[in-house]
Image 1: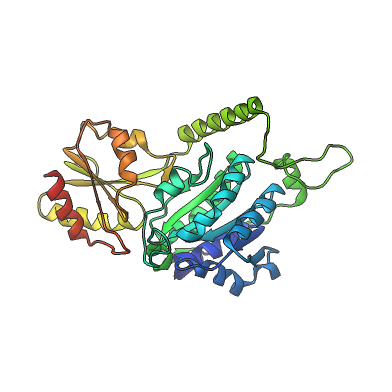
Image 2 (image 1 turned 90 degrees about the vertical axis):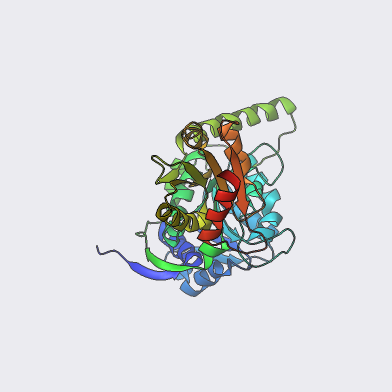
Length: 359
């Protein structure tokens, strides 16, 4: 079968990939710069072809609680929003994590705090990677750097969510959501039958068959001893994810004198920075975290004794740089460079900042 290649926005790729994955439901609310996800789903009308439910909820709070209900039934359900909207979803995200329910969340980041700007940002790193809601929980966080990865990470996010019974999030930024590139669309997967859900998700609340007791989905536990056992189990699961699911990309890192750590759109810009630096005789490598959690701590730590300095390049005031510094543990100088307010730096600006801070 020939590959299906289309030219589309990153947001549109998310929508197409969700349908092709066999997602059972999408519940969302419009907000710039991710509204095309919902708009594309409404235009494609997957309820007429695959049976996928697409619903614009009355609010972000309603949308995440609809996801909670669908996930509790073992369905492959998702939502999307941009930064202020994701803030509103945080209580529901914490409930999903506490009930160990798989789902996919998409955040196409915009600048803040508050309503901020509709321009791109990467300032939701803390909110996502550190757990923006209450309690000791983690989200599996994927950071796409292309429209192709926006499409590919839908299936990956769902698969990881169901593998570990844990919410997964695609943490993109406005640049990746709005830019247009060629995309190889994934093949269609059939939606799972109720029998497959009963077999693969025995915890799912699908009514009360005659041969078993009713499943109750909840994150509530009033006995502190049992709640502690639950949290210990969560932490054990997170340690397994940290061992098994770290993903990253290394570009020109062999023999580099300096290392850039960047994700999403900033990683793309930094690739051009590397080319410009090479023309000037400066050897720079790029390590791009693909999973922001689990974070590629060990991969970054290996450069502590190999490079003269590291710079974390982010569209924020300095968030991921904290994890880079923890990985390096003081063995080499680590600096941060970022622009705020939705301003995207040029490759030359990144190189100038590296020279100023590290050379």
